[in-house]
Image (cartoon, rainbow, N blue to C red):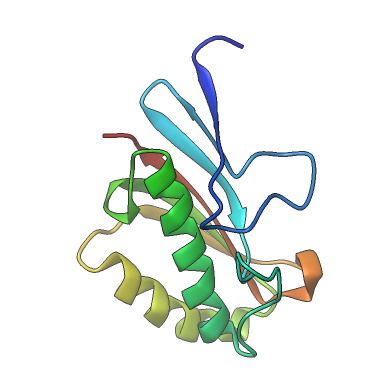
Length: 128
């Protein structure tokens, strides 16, 4: 499809299925959900939801950078949690990563996430 660009970076985990890390179109970048995988080893990072959220946000930042964007340009996120009891811990890491920037957000508890991680975050951002 014309005008749609697939985004790939080695600074974030490779897609573990038939999808792209992100797709850029019309001044926006649509980032697939990131989980707490080390991009170099593919191993899950962190035993707590907060520790995993740090890796998730680092992976998301890498994908956004590859697309010509950044966390400061995020318009909307969806946070998926394996347990809503982890919301406050993940929220603290999320607030640290985004600083004063406050994108729109949904946070939902799901029955299971890929590789049995505790948190996954997807995003839509503006491209510079």
